[in-house]
Image 1 (cartoon, rainbow, N blue to C red):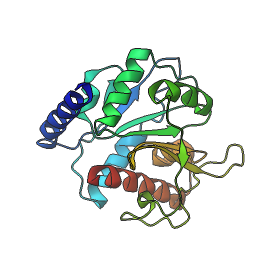
Image 2 (cartoon, one colour):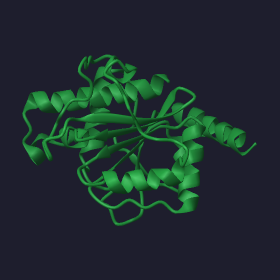
Image 3 (cartoon, rainbow, N blue to C red):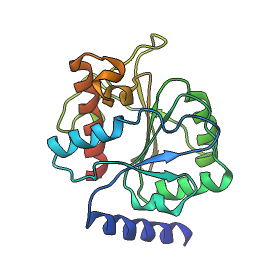
Length: 216
């Protein structure tokens, strides 16, 4: 009954939001990690998606807290940072309900958050594990094609980029992009001085994620 109520709540909020725009949001979390990092990333991704895949997202992302009922307004929530992540039990339950009710969380490691995120995801889904997505996953076959899977934007530890997910009944409901740093590639060119082809790949991959979520 609780999950059914959550799904109805999600659909009500989502349909209301669709009347105006397909807004997306940034997740504010506890623990001291810099959830607010990459401030130009999502506005640039939004502009790219609106120009290239026909979305009608508001030009600025909203900010939502993990325990807030307002997360149910957004089909896509973005989470990033470098350091510690902490969810209270109430926040973890709220995120679980949001995701099982139809929401989507994209966590992009800005370098250093992986061990904290994995620990906290056990509160959200104690019975589930992150699974690596193969290069044949539909995420990599939207408008832009990535036959080798997740692109590499920044080098940190010399590891390969990985797209990891949590699934429920075959539906991808959480995506964790690791050792890729997509968000850095979405930022203004002057922030990291990345080559234009690298920025373009990052924006195209981000666009694929948004397209996949909005179509699912």
